[in-house]
Image (cartoon, rainbow, N blue to C red; front, side, top):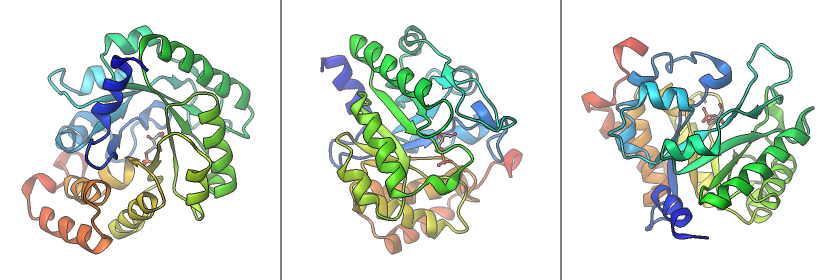
Length: 273
Ligand code: R5P
């Protein structure tokens, strides 16, 4: 791949750990004003300095992120349905590659819905994006969406979705951690990052998820709700960084969390509490 493509990738992944901590704030594109992301600017601002990349839509990027921010952007370019529909897989490409270049992003991302009614459309959209991305040096992230069927987060299903994404040319695949995750990793020849899913009962559970995913071969996380729905989002993000980049154990990450909670910047902004 050309220099521009490589440079975009290197801006997102640490040269030391080879991993990345992406902050996912794209939920509103189909979920609307998600809890604690209602005021996206207030949620995002304190977290941006601690993220290796920011995953969001063009609307939130333009309206809620200052152009002075240098954090790499992963631009969601698929959408077109909402949680009011039973079938969430009916997505189209909603943002052009030209727009992605204009916004100076580091990658574009779309959801693929393997096993869903619009599987074919989402997979051919991925192929189309890869063709366009390779022409201009833009990495493409395939997000293996499970829609409302959270039980799809098992190794057989995710291994299939991740492998198909890689076969069609995705440069990075975002998926879920699951029992037997090493098999998902083994079958996918491109870097995997894991989402967190709905908020877990404890911060410890989210840290364990990240630790297990990295131990089994993930190259990082692309996490949202378990960070910004935490009562201490900045502290949580820093604790996750210690796992992803510094090989911290869950115990050590909990220590980071406890220390960081003492900082005023670690607290949830009053407007979103
Ligand atoms: C869905 O809206 C997006 O793909 C999210 O970016 C993804 O699910 C990661 O966010 P969370 O960790 O909240 O699941």
